[in-house]
Length: 382
Ligand code: OSB
Ligand code: MG
Image (cartoon, rainbow, N blue to C red):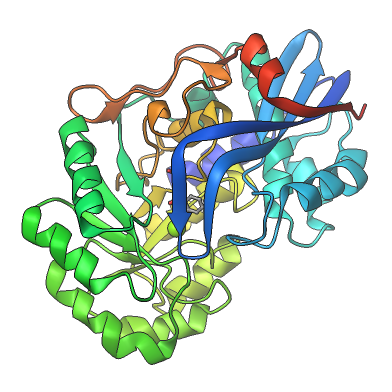
């Protein structure tokens, strides 16, 4: 029996305890600078937060859905609806996390909504027991190597400046966003200037199989991987594309759950997986995918969704799982926000590592003054 398999089962046996009060909040934080992927540009982070109180303990969950459906089909509005009208009604004091997952299965999809509740409940459980989240998951702390995701830039000059700054900060690998018409030349410019930096690209599904010949040009730049070149809905297409490329493909938005990961690995659609716990329904499914991937020699890493400090802390704890062997997209807070809603901020040490937050649960504290300032809407739902 593999180690995390038993960790996940142990987690599933935990009771969620008593729940006294549940609140949904919508927050809006300006980004330090706009962030562009092939399908969208964001200037603000708007997120749905869930606060659960029980027996004097407070836990928080952050939904990774955006207000728009340009990365994934779920939005803050669909998540609000599904959480309030279908998921929370089956959350009862005293059930186990495994029973929670069973009840959630009746709702098809909506994994970002499910993860929000799972994350908040796991935070409550860990805080109630006085355990740091990584210990509840069953892993010792370790320094987390940090990577950076650089949005699409107007010019190769701006891109090179951003890469230079990231290297100076100590990031362990650089990801650059690409899209049709803004790809090979940009990669070439970065590679010429930084011949050895661990480098990868993320297309957020902008290409089709007809671009295979074009994408093959990327093979000459020693990229760690090409993330999600084809549509979110095309696992089979990626298996055809992977056969014509020497660079490993990595899937992000195609993977909604363990079944998708199994299909992608069986079809050889990718050689690496980006696991975003908030995209796959939460920490338990993320660990199942990590486990399955490790058993099939597929390296995994934790992606990010430009989360506030709440979601970012969860991603950091998840990466204590030894199957996460590649640097993730968890970057320093100052890259995203002037003021975040939690303390402490994420910072890199001089070697480019993040220290796992100390203390019970996610280990981060809500700054209520800042939270109040950025809250657009607040609703008590229980
Ligand atoms: O595709 O990984 C992605 C951000 C928003 C939506 C999709 C993606 C991203 C990132 C940034 O790449 C990750 C981060 O810095 O949190
Ligand atoms: Mg991605």
